[in-house]
Length: 72
Image 1: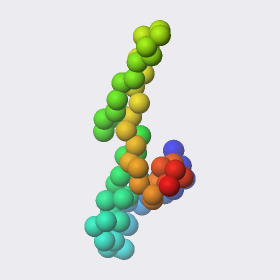
Image 2: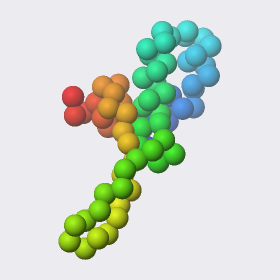
Image 3: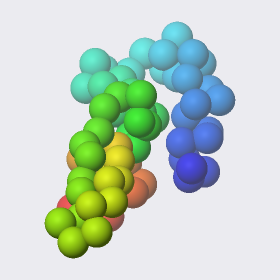
Image 4: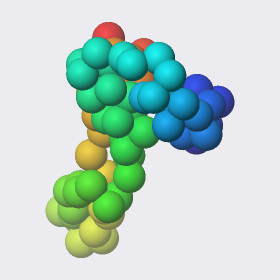
C-alpha cells in the first residue's frame, strides 16, 4: 500500500468533516482506497497450457490513484 493511501485512510473522517470536499473528490478518494481490493470484485484468468487459475482484483483506473494514475 502506498503512503498516500495510508494517510487518506487514517484521516478519512477529518477530510470529510473538516475540508468538505466536492462529491467528485470523495468519489475518487473512495475509488483509490478500494483499488485492488479483492472484496470489490475481480476476474479469474486461466492459463490455456497448464490450466492454472489466477484471481486478479479490479483496479480503480483513476488518475488520482498512485498506482493507476501512472498509466495515464
